[in-house]
Length: 328
Image 1 (cartoon, rainbow, N blue to C red):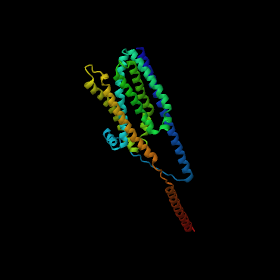
Image 2: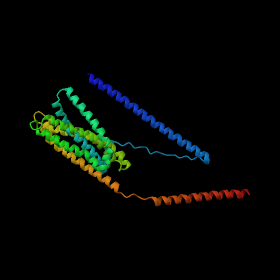
Image 3: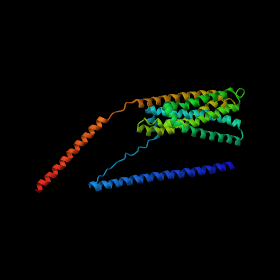
Image 4: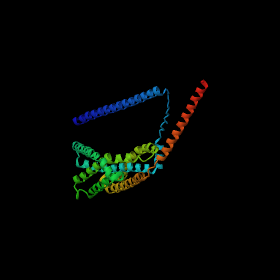
């Protein structure tokens, strides 16, 4: 009871802190906008005082078109790059679901009481937070050293190797590998799941949108964020339920499904790695594209502007001379 009260108080304090930070950031943004508008107004007034002319520029913003989920999914299927990003998100969530349930089954078996289970999960969350924070400090260096493709391959490779060890430990049984060791391998694997997502997977996923066009970013991102994560979790959960029903035995234990879960996991890792390779080629093509030299075009545009100005000045002088001659 006291633990839950403490957690509720901490959660309330954190929520209030988030609200305060949001209001502060929003107020800073409004103050900056007001400052820019005031600066622009002052420059306009000075221009009017200097030239005696008033120039009005009207800008019409194109209304943003809100797409339905079906239209976003259609846009996603039309782009190879968006399909690759969606496959990354989908496979990650499938992999997390396939290992997390089995790991928690081992955890409940090892720590049957609620207090010991919660204490273990608290240590797990603390470990994830510390490791993720330290890895995020090194994310930029990792990207500089390995590039986008190499960095994006770290999560599937790390998760895949640890998952193979975890499934192997479960399949070996308690006679060969103690339950505590299997649980430790599963814990390390689940820490890697979350840490690599926060520090490497999410930044690489967002970077993958950069070479795409603006329409693809807007239309495809909605479908990927909604369908990729939810469909991946649902597919992983449905796979486990089907395997428990088919090969779970009379007890219906998820432990009996470890070999089949491992095969599904390796398949998802292979599809994930292939999607990273597709996006890696996109980045390579973007980097190798020759830069267009527009200096000649800019020079011609500058010459044209100069000629137009000289013609206008000549017309203006001619009008002045005509007025003077009439006055005489």
